[in-house]
Length: 238
Image (tube, rainbow, N blue to C red):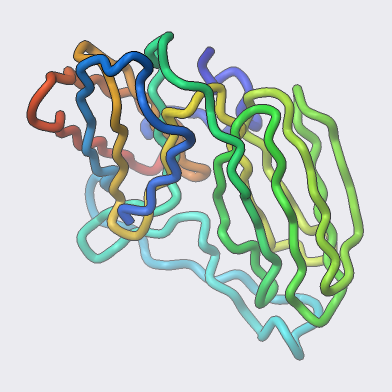
């Protein structure tokens, strides 16, 4: 199942640290395993970093914040792109139920993008000395809109594969994304734009790469039994 059908409207217009969030481990039965090592890069000259105005609670949030919806290193490496294998091996172990947290800290969601396996739970935290809220209207998961004072943890379970946008209605610049994974072969790129997948049987794999600003782009890679398969994916503004 491709997540392209579940993404927020407009998020998938393709023209589209190693901080890699891998879910689970190991092929069953000791089968020969290969791996993928990749980078997500920006094509062309990166746009200047943008700022967004802070319109409320400036005493804590400041007067402006980095937009953070497009983070590109000096080497054109893209942070917070999500990569997954579209034709994941059927014998792959199921996604492990790992603890996933999203904090509201300094009037921003930290981290901005997380992956959670279908059926898994994200713990939303609030470390700020003010009131936040978490609001989402997904297509296949349950909608929620919860106010959240400092120190309260709100667990939200996501049952179906989908990309879910999270907003704080009280602070309009605050956005996060929860990518609900259909299997364990998902990764979020860190500051170096890197991702990796291990424990793959040799073969041809189709990748999908999604970014909230840049849409989606496909890629393909052939995995062998010895050296890791290398792949570089370029994305550009629409």
